[in-house]
Length: 467
Image (cartoon, rainbow, N blue to C red):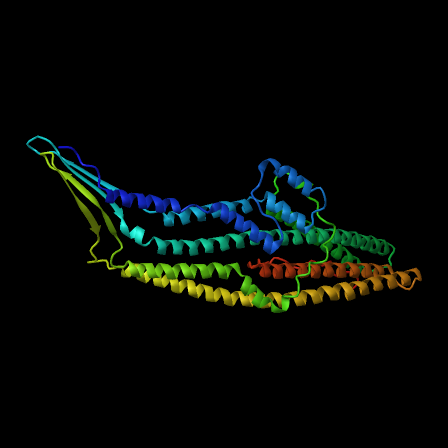
């Protein structure tokens, strides 16, 4: 007897599965395009895959001039591999999206039995396909789309966070280098004070206690200058790391001083609303909530019948005759009725909702703090720049006039010079604070969470001398 062919029903099931699998294409290229477009929209900076052949030439061209904020960002976008890692992360997300949509392969079951007394073997052939995978594919597709959306938002926020880190590192590197230069000047002023004190002490015109004060102030200023130099070096290295520069570190030149901070626009007064509306964190959590809700509905719908397979079965007895028929396989809900899966899905949904709520509360508070910090920082910077520093300069000029008229001694002149350095350092720290506050506002307006920097401590020259 001839062996019959597999009937058309199984062929249809298999073909349908292959068709649905082919439809689940990997959208990595579109994900990358959306990421680059959104980065341009929110920051004005271009993000693209690195051309390794042209990378060194691009970075060299950007490092030809002192590094401003825009150049630092462009170097980082080209050289920092963390940005390129986000393209790979989108590839992983696209692969996960594909894996959640692909239909399981048909299962083939083959049994071959030989009788103990000898003779021809008996055949048992089975071909089954998961029907639940086909029936639940629309629901799984909706879950996968929401999950993919959340992954996109998270990747975009990481990119913005990397850019924010570069900007902050640039501010710290420029400011700390300027502070170190000012404290070098303070060391020279303190050294002049010691020389004057020693000369006066040797001729008996200065008490020992005043000489010791000048020597202590000089030693303390040298200590502060050494710390400032170490901090400037560390800040420079932090900027190099943030930019991803490895081979051309010696070519990086910083501006001599920090420029005026950028104007963040007129939305600061309404920053809380803007931050919540633009927040990528909240958008990602909202997508996770949608995915969790859909997963909970799917778990409830398949609680009693999570596994169902249909197919055909063919048997050939020892006489060589074939028998064909449909095959059904499913799990009887005797012990496991899906309560654990359903409960877990509902609990996960509740968790996502709670996380979103608390994230919104924290973001609103961050926005209020950032708006207030910007106002205070701008006020302090204005006061230092327009009042304290001019007064210190005027005091130095008046002291020089009295010195020329022999109405002031050398220590009064040194004190006035020290006071001017003090106010210059205060102004610089206020300028740094204003810059960081403005960067925080910008980051919230972009829709990303700003970094929290608690390491910044003002560095002043201190007051010594005859007090």
